[in-house]
Image 1 (cartoon, rainbow, N blue to C red):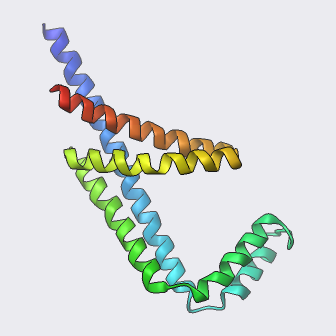
Image 2: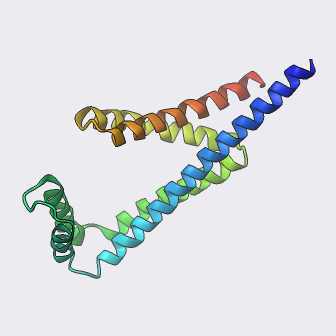
Image 3: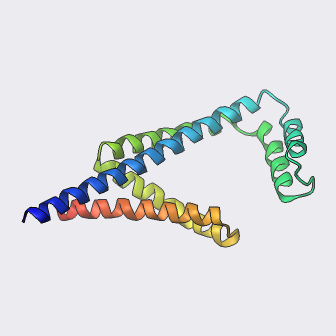
Length: 163
């Protein structure tokens, strides 16, 4: 009987560590989104087209290549973008990531639901992206997200069973 209890405790401790790892990852995504948002807002005070051309030269990208074309395309879109909508959407995403991270760290059920549902929403898009552009990075993102969603769903299932 004591062995079963010890196994349950160690299993619970392992699950808690995994939950903390997911929470830290979600917080990291929020920080990364905040950094990107600050960078985008800062770019609006510069000639983005000239910066894009300078980056292409600095990194030795082929002027007619895929990466160069993408960079120039998005650089041309930025000045005409609806900055208010971009900032509001980004701040909403950042707030969502930080709330989820806080809730997961504190072992809140709502955060597990939020993480499982929001992560599950990305899976079809990540799968489609990986199928169209297979790469190790795209596969890692898809697998990582699937692992998080499955883990959070398992946590919710365990709670429902009464652990």
